[in-house]
Image 1: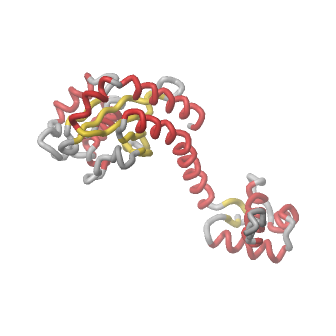
Image 2: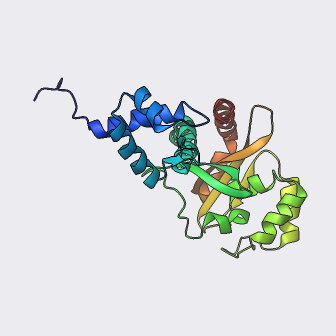
Image 3: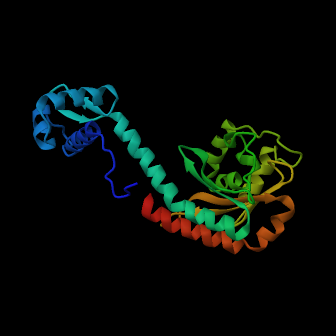
Length: 252
């Protein structure tokens, strides 16, 4: 087999992409005739492609006849930024997983919710079974409590008002006053002693941005009997959090 053979290219896709690039180069929009010239396409082809892109939400014809990018493009841009973040932080999570032999997690505040952004696990470091959605269990996990502790009191009370303290194990904190006291006193390292799942322990440390503001948390999960060893090596987690912080300063 000829390994140097050129790949099969779809010319219609190439034409559509050139046309979208031409549309994108005009923030205030441009008429089809101008786009046709700039993309090097016949006018009839340009109209057909623009109508197809508009149908799929990737282009929009304004009332004055000018064409601009559609909402689907902006949606893709947001997803691309999220993927860019993943490609930057995943190596740090994988390195921590391999170093400590535990599953590692990164979470952030997104639209007033606590979200898991990425997880690095493996056969020897399985992730905790999320049998209850994380949105309903932040109070019972180290990463959730770490991020709840980052909120001011008003935002924290608002979050807890929208997310009841579900009883998941005999160790889960379900009393609001007790949880608030814990969140007010935790610093540096946050722990979960079988509060989310029996037999599983978790630890989390905060992650800041370039200004020093806390934006998320780095966490690990492991067998509860292994948690004390992880606590003793918390400096590894803090070093990884610092690495992610540098990544965030380049990405956000």
